[in-house]
Image (tube, rainbow, N blue to C red; front, side):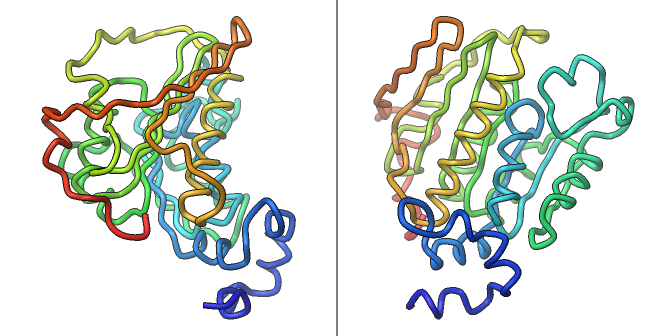
Length: 259
């Protein structure tokens, strides 16, 4: 496929919309076309998932599926950028999706007003080209990890606490999975402290990795975890180690071609 052929389904207005992200060092026209034909699942869409979903939508990922249950409350507003004061007490997924649609007419946004269970997570992952895991609980993160592993689609896990955030980038069957890192669920702190700026930073970095993977641009951070300690101003990356006895991925075949 040539670049001219790759842009056949991009309208002139779409090309104008994405003009600043097509060129040397960013996306090719073919890469932009790949984004348009891709589907990304983001759950949840609060402090990290909200910025991630917003960046994917603005970049032109053709279909963005978001999942987030419950209603917006005041303590959410230090980090959940898809919310606002007038939306307090209203269902998050519905209004978050409306905001995303307002940011890009060329992107289809599907909203789910709850956190998916095992079966639904699997079904959603099978309909997606990439899964961005941004929920607070390890139970949900491991559920999404299993779903992405079974669907054999790339899996990005973002996490946060205080002024520190992590981002791990994984490919089922070829890299470690989240269960390799956490074979047992660690304790969960319901009302953990967090500064909104770290949430947005990690969510945006997750979106950047997803954009690179989906468009075939740059070098994805496969099998590595980035940790940003904002309190001390330190950044490090660590290689991940696959557990040969992992109950999730030890017998998993290679990721599907092209992912």
